[in-house]
Amino acid sequence: MSDDRWVAPTVLLAVDLVILTLRDSRLQVLLVQRGVEPYRGALALPGGFLNHAEEDLPAAAHRELAEEAGLSADQLHLEQLGVYGTPGRDPRGRVVSVAYLAVAPRLPEPTAGTDASDACWTPTDRALSPDARLAFDHRRIVADGVERARAKLEYSALATAFCGPTFTISELRDVYEAVWGVSLDPRNFYRKVQSVDGFIVPAGTTRKTDTGRPARLFRPGPREALHPPMTRPTQPTDKETAEA
Amino acid sequence: MSDDRWVAPTVLLAVDLVILTLRDSRLQVLLVQRGVEPYRGALALPGGFLNHAEEDLPAAAHRELAEEAGLSADQLHLEQLGVYGTPGRDPRGRVVSVAYLAVAPRLPEPTAGTDASDACWTPTDRALSPDARLAFDHRRIVADGVERARAKLEYSALATAFCGPTFTISELRDVYEAVWGVSLDPRNFYRKVQSVDGFIVPAGTTRKTDTGRPARLFRPGPREALHPPMTRPTQPTDKETAEA
DNA sequence: GGAATAGTGTCTGTAAGACAATATAGA
DNA sequence: TCTATATTGTCTTACAGACACTATTCC
Image 1 (cartoon, each protein chain N blue to C red):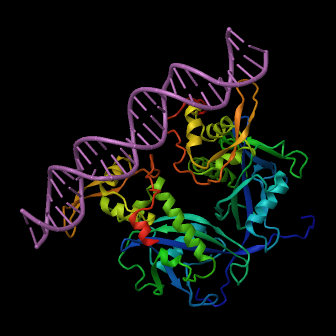
Image 2: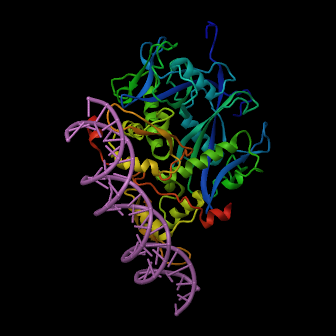
Image 3: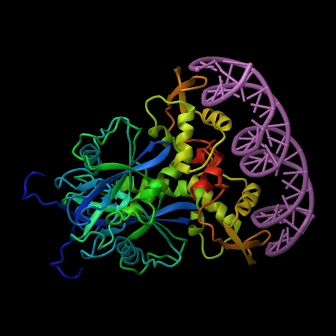
């Protein structure tokens, strides 16, 4: 720093997205097959470089969300996940990536017909398995995103972001069971989730299911932080041990 | 993107530090008075640009920690807090800052005699008051850091990072009371903190206080995540209402 | 002994987990 | 009727919070 001619180094800034949703009662993440080098042909998170030097980071995240997944900002949770800037993580140079976590309800095939027709939903456990071979350090980013989602289900209303505008309590329980990888007692969950003030509010109507009694519909409540939090079981349950 | 000559824009990358500690039973943050433009003379977080294009982000955080606060990596908690990259946040250009949260035990005047003799510990409530006038968007970064610390006291062993290698349960309670801004029952806290398996382990010795019975000493346990979490009181207590 | 802090015992209300019982749909 | 799911009720246990009480130091 004693050198007067010292100038701060510049870096390339990218935005990567961990987009989570629930499909077939499984937590899935959107991955795209890379069409260019490096890691051509490998699976990677949707994302890319800033468009121009003045683009804001959340704006870039929304842009990539639309370009690569066909998802709009409506009905979608988006939060910053972290920065990944280890030198050498990208062979093209010093690329620092800002990762965002997006949670979307299951939409009617959002990847079909868009620019990113090579995007595909992948179960997170498969994406995180050792033989998945994700590009760059995207395996770690996916792992961090899943872990963030698991943690936030406990003390925030993030679970409703996996559901549509209205949902049944069973659907909400399905979110918790899939993301946490546990089985929850439907009856205790039913009362617990309703006892947390402002978490969900009744929508007044019901929805028929394939079989059984129709279920009341709810919509997300005003509360974002849950007090008391939803408690994640510590003991392994049937569902978790089955997946292990 | 259809323009073949398009090249990704570059940004300047900086690292800023929210260094928290406990002094006089108050949560304090380290601020430095800026000696150069912009915001010359204003208070700001310690930090700076990357030294060279290949410097790793945690390495840069540690370097700034040593340069501007005289703190070494030993006995210190450091975690990434987030990215702040809104265009226009720095008049010098597109500067994207990676904020780190550091938690340090109270050390013997770490700011004296170092390069950053103009660094000063500031109570967080004063740093966050409207008349503090921090440089850049550092007010928000401090607020985010304090909020992160508050949240992590609940479900992680972060509180021990505020203490020295050994500590009494009263000192640990002091951390919770100062960071949360509440009063906790010493007797219930005593049993609660010991019931969380692996949080703290007895060191075997005791420490005399000014007055009263000597207290047993503990050291941080192996557990980083607390199950069950420490519960933060929701109702305002005497201490909180007194500060409001 | 008195003051101050450390540490233990006990009670009570609340909430979580287990699980029986009832309600409402389709077949 | 049976089956399947939704919703309610009840019981037991665990824990948070309030607080009396004992222990150990210095004065």
